[in-house]
Every structure is written in C-alpha cells, then in structure tokens.
Amino acid sequence: MDEDIRKILADCPTWAVVGLSNNTSRAAYGVARFLQGRGKRIVPVHPSAETVHGEQGYPTLADIPFPVDCVDVFVRSELAGDIADQAVGINAKAVWFQLDVVDPDAYARTTAAGLTMVMNRCPAIEWGRLGPS
Image (cartoon, rainbow, N blue to C red):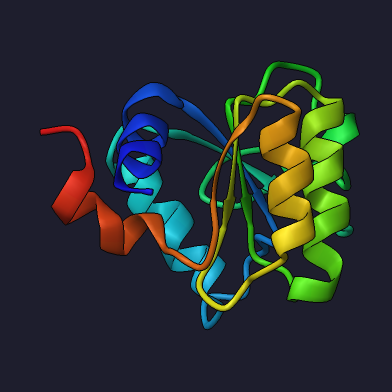
C-alpha cells in the first residue's frame, strides 16, 4: 500500500474531494486545505456545489468539466462504493477512501478497472511519511 500512497501523492495534481463543503468542523475541510497548501488543485464535490477554499464546487463527479486525477472520498462506507464506481466512470487515475471508509468490493472493482486505490487512510497524515519532498 505504501507504493500506492506514494504514487497518488506524487502523481495526482487534481483532487476531487467528495463530501467537501464550507463546514469548517468536518475533516474534509481541513484535508482539502492541506492538499491545496501542497500545490494540489482541489475540486469540491457536494450536492450543494459550494465554492470552498476559492474553488468552484460541483454536485457530482460527472458534473466536473475537466479531468480529475484522484477522487478523495469523505462519505460513509455504505455510500463510498458508488463514488468509486463514478470515479471509474470519469476516468480518474486514483481513488482515496478516507479514515474509516472501507469497502473491499469497491476496492476490487476499482483496482480491476486499472485505478490505484487507497482505503482507510488520510493523505494529510500520510504526506509526512510518503509525500513528495
């Protein structure tokens, strides 16, 4: 898994953050700010399509009008598999399930489709260990 984490952190400049809103108490808000501070473009994906951290939001992954490299998933595990399938549908390179987001069937489908995937990890935590220097 470390190799997959390293690859995603180094090779994915554009991150769609599913579940990101302007709720500053949610983990997605802080992680998106962290990624942005490391030079990543963040794209909020939330039904309300709010602009967050200065970036235009979209209601779904399919609504994003440009390529996305990594889909970072901040939703409950029972909803995450559908998001992973949508990530395959938009030709993302990678899917990242946040801490406590686990769906082994989604992992199998997503990696079988050729995407790199990480589950139950946080990029803000992993960056210090495996992120680009």
